Image 1 (tube, each protein chain N blue to C red):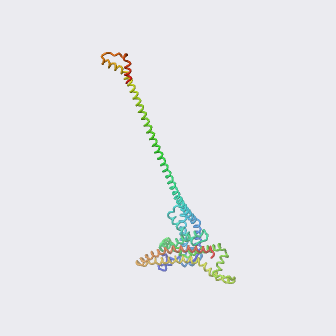
Image 2 (cartoon, rainbow over the protein chains, first blue to last red):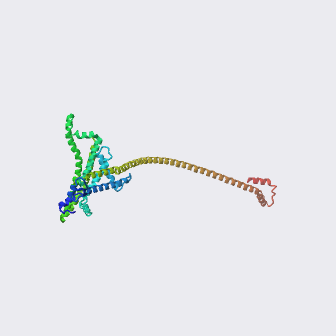
Image 3 (spheres, rainbow over the protein chains, first blue to last red):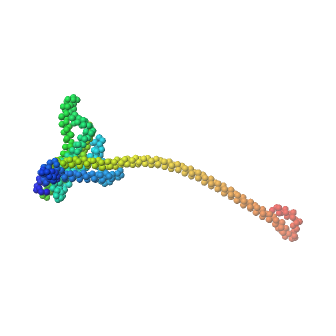
Length: 286
Length: 156
């Protein structure tokens, strides 16, 4: 694996390193060649592998669904169009179930989230060495193929959701309504002075609640996928430790992959459903 | 695992994907689904209507058949009646004609008989005279016995 020595630690570390492009401390721009170099770049760097795979998979989703959507008629659907309609109806049912306000953006948002996250998670099922090995042959040192194991990707989505929550809260409740929601509960009082005294405590509790939404969304998805990826990497280590362990590794790999299909789907679904629920809360007083 | 610009890149990509999905994917698919739902509902309603119409049609057909049967029975009855009349008429005609023919034949026979009788009558005197002459051995003068001969002829 690359220039590092093939120790277990090195192998794992190599697999957890993103292909980073950014500004070196000396001022020049370029790829980071070691994990330390990538760290030194700080905020002004970009993970090329995460961006490439997420945009490619997102593009694949949009392209496929767009093709199908153009062929959509009221006649008999066939093949992929059938699948697209199934997905759309599934999402539509879910959104109708948990989103009660009127907003044309929520259902497409939920569809995008679900399919996109599902596709990104599914990259986890590709054996961990295949794509990095091909990339290595092409001269690319690092390649992390599962974008959702990069917190940047999950936080990127959840922060976008967070801004939508704030936007719709302000839009539907007004600035004062939203502020009241953050400061007038859970502790309530009729006496104005007590009310004012309660504001810091309320703001603290509600503020945590508000911030917890994007953080939990992002960390849940990241944590699940990162743990899954890590187990795949550990299982992959078994392949280089003798015939018996390699066979065991094969069995474990298969079993974990089967179980992981559930996690892949479930995490995509949870992210989507919670986003819809949060947006629904942003549309209603409570 | 460093937090960096990728975060913003992902947010932008996400926003663009959602916008694209909202603009170009969701509406046509949902529209198609709605249209299909409507056309299925229409189809079911049409089928219902068709069934009802069929029922009505069957009822109407049964009525028409019943009427037609009645009419056919009437026609057959009147035809039978007319046939009987025609046969009766024909029988009557035949009888009349037969009687007429018989009468004609009878009168002809009568005429023939009379003619034969007249002819015989004409010959009687000659025969009688000749017979008498044979019997008497002498000539009989017809003019002398004409009165008697006429009487004889009249007896025929």
